Length: 296
Image 1 (cartoon, helix red, strand yellow):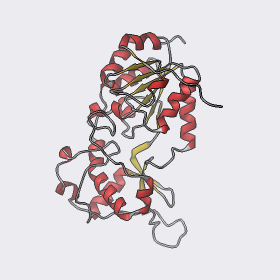
Image 2 (cartoon, rainbow, N blue to C red):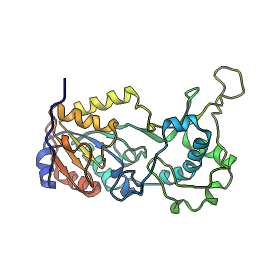
Image 3 (cartoon, one colour):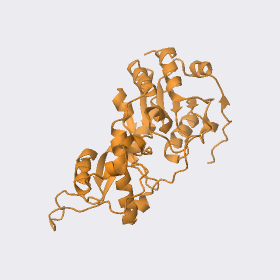
């Protein structure tokens, strides 16, 4: 059965958003635009430079790409680790505490929603602070790998420049050109087959790369979170990738109001009842003081 056409969203005001969402329990879908005020640039914002993110196929299939990624990540990870939640993150946590927000589905991997105090968060694309072995499945903290990479590459981060002066991407990557001599660590867990002192499998950040699928269980939990709310609020996402846009389409198809707050147009605007072209920090802060607590 074909999907019926959806009328384009109207460009509204904050008052329109409040009028539509008043009395609703919200699920919120966030993207990179929510974290830009914390110093983490997005991939697709109006002022973002062109980037070509690494794909899953490149990571697993090309040792040079993998070395380049880990060298850049070794620098960028330090930056993301020290970032702090901004006013938008704090506003969502406050709305959840009042019962206005049911939960947050985030496409970000920076854990800033959790740091701000949000309790019900689905990290759709994973999280930057963990690393998984593609052979044995062992998951270790990113900090443990950082120690081993530093031992293998002493002083590398300092040689490429002060972290604050290095361009950082949303996945904890950093733009570093001189990576040819960087040494990559393999999984140091015991070999699951007992054939070697250690596993030696490929280590990968526990992040969903381009060309890789979001785990089904995570997708199902996100759909359930949308269905448990009265409306869907999208904040700071261009909705370019299907992994997030499907929840917007689902909300619209099941009769739930959809509001999109983003600087610039999105690929989900046609599903929105109201589209607000604005920054997320100021908008979410305003909503935290104007949206009433929904009835029990």
